[in-house]
Image 1 (spheres, rainbow, N blue to C red):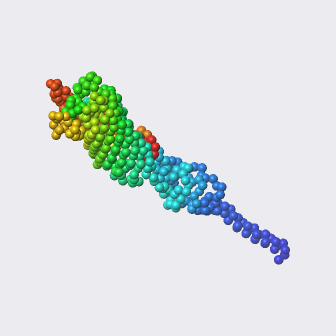
Image 2: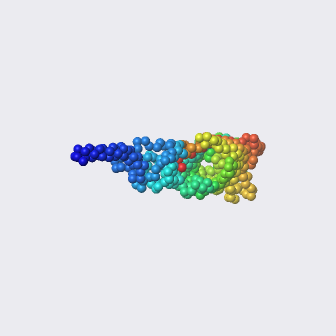
Image 3: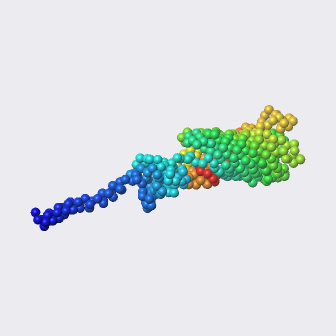
Length: 425
């Protein structure tokens, strides 16, 4: 075979081999790129930018989310729970990651579609709270503002209903009215939702306004509204100060909408700074309790409520309360407060008992939205006297009827609200 023939055959063979190899070269690029995209376990390349689109606060995690790498990326895409869209407490409360969160949280492997869950903290143990109560009253006439503001320490990290709200607290508690002011401190211990104990010390100051302060020598003395007005007109009321200790026990329970509450307060008064011409007086008229009380001694007050609490569906979480309240007041007298000729075995001023309906409306209960002004509540309580020396009808003193008709109730209107100034509920 000559040389020209050999050259033609070699060229032909090389051309066939080249044409056969070209299709493989043409498809190698896309297949390699697709294989690289399906292998995220190697992690992003150094210097690669994070995705420009992040999951929004109200979006769920993608269903086809890949398992996270062993080393967390520098800029992870945020993952949020749609149930927290309305929350104001932040990621620590919701238990999910958010924009700007720690990328090392939740770095353990998870199944596709499962959101990363962080440990859930049940609120802060420490808080500063307040409660305000403004209450006008008729029969007898009065107006009072009470305020509790102070520190609370949460006792338990449990979500059981029986332990809900358990705390120890220390509060500054002023009480102000046009006739009297109390300034003091309250220690509160609530080991469970069904029981609360409070101990309060107050310095008490009567301003000498209206009919008060008025003191007496015997439990049988006349302290009716008529006599209080007569003594005021004669200038027998005066300003003075003293001390008061209150020990309160509250028991409460709820079954569905039925609520039972009973608050018992033991009060010890000390008023030993009386004028010289009144130094022999052992008793005084306590306007807040509408009874004759020892200047150095105990008295008891109890408020018991049986109510139906109807929660109203809606975003405000409003509630309607309706039921009945019974109030008992009992002063305690030792023999030394009785005068010669008095029957020391009889207590003419106790017990007192009044009863009537209690109606209230909670406008909203949203501590997440309104932590500093929450649960504004309006309460109406008219009560008719069953036992009272001067408010159950006819009461004749020196031939004059000084009693108040039993048809006339004691009416209290109260506006109450609460809030949290620091901490998380």
